[in-house]
Image (cartoon, rainbow, N blue to C red; front, side):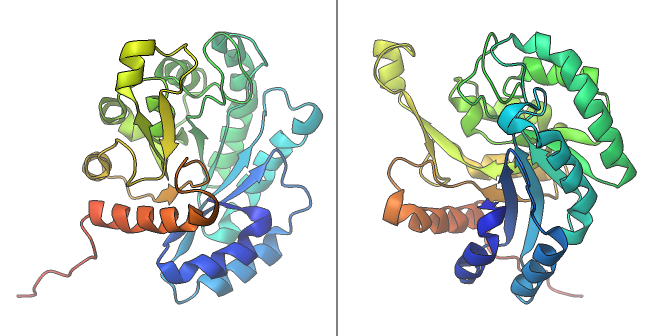
Length: 287
């Protein structure tokens, strides 16, 4: 994942390490971002590298759409309208949430906002996917996002039964709630439109001795290759379901591979994930 404002600086520096896809992300607003110019310059950088832009992302609270989030709905609309310039058909982000209210109370507003946005996207051949991050919220209260629990997903997809809305899924955000990501992925894989390459480590010894409400941390987000998940299994489940999307490494969370070790960790994750998918593609012999 690369922040849109940094893309032209960051992507050329890390392309030589073999990255194959980049998610362009924005926080709360796309502002005065010049989509046409950025798309043209990015395509020039990516040419010859067998790499692409995977999706466009807006992280904001579209359900309140007030204060610092006042431009979030308009930003979803801009990304939907300009996705084709980047060669993508996918726009992702948080759902938003009625602040500090139970998840079920946000569903009518979700239906209003994303019912309209999904129709706009459908008209342009674009899919929408919601990241499964709790943003430190739970069922009863929180901010930013309701799409972090499978019970919420059922309510969301019942409220807006459109084929072009789904999930931007990663195991880490489920593991912090002690949910088994593998069994969950098997059940929900047909609604997974995009995958974030981020993992977690659960310290079960701390959970068993101190529980999850004590002073000691019991789970850490990790860069793939350093966490608990078997990404060979994850990729197998995705491929068995016909998934043809990307896995975009979301860095900047690992407690060890951070600071001056950040890109070292991300490149390790890149090479690890390539091995989990079977390594380099080898053509079959011809008859």
